[in-house]
Structure formats: C-alpha cells, structure tokens
Image: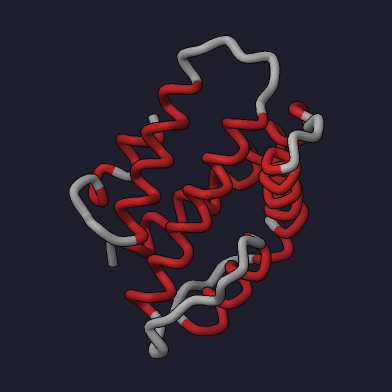
Length: 136
C-alpha cells in the first residue's frame, strides 16, 4: 500500500528514494504478525521525515532542511518555507506521538501501539496532501 503511494520515488537516489524504501519496509512488516509495533513506527516516522525533507529540498527557496527527526518541526518548516498549506494543528499531536514512538524504538522502550495506530490514521490525510504537493 505505502510502496504504491511512493512509487514515483522508486528509482530516485535522494531523500524521496529513501522515503520509498521505508514505504516498502512498512509494507513488508504489515505481512508479519508482530505484537510490538516499534519497527513499523520507526519506518513510518522515517518515511514521513524523508518525504518532508525531500519537499524542503525540492520546493523551498532555501533548498535545505533542518537536521531534526521531529515531524512536527519539519511540518512547521515545510509550511513556512514552501507553498504547502494545511491545518497543522490537526496533525501536531499525531506527529508528536509518531516521533516519540520512533525515539522509543531506538532505545528499546515499550510503545503504546494503539496510540501509534491512531496517529497513523490521523496522519493518513496529511500523507496524501504531502504526496499531492510533491507531484505539483
């Protein structure tokens, strides 16, 4: 499902290509019955991060991105530095949860999988908006 959405970046050797790679990893993980969602969360966070950084490089007047892993900050910068517009307050909490989950994965902490899954549902619309913006 995600790999298909990111197909336009399949052979790209930059941040967009890395976003596609994480999308492929998510699709593979969804075929396995893991009780722990931490690896899924890590790849989902990375997929969004690489996509937003790709958009900052290709769509902003600065052609650069910050070295943060926090999705909320990346969305704020994307809105500020490009023509992309959305109701950022609608996504802030979900993006924060996903960022925290990915950090917890790195340190092997237990993750609230239900909270994470709810956040993925909320950010699904944002993901569609970002992919549409990428194709403009």
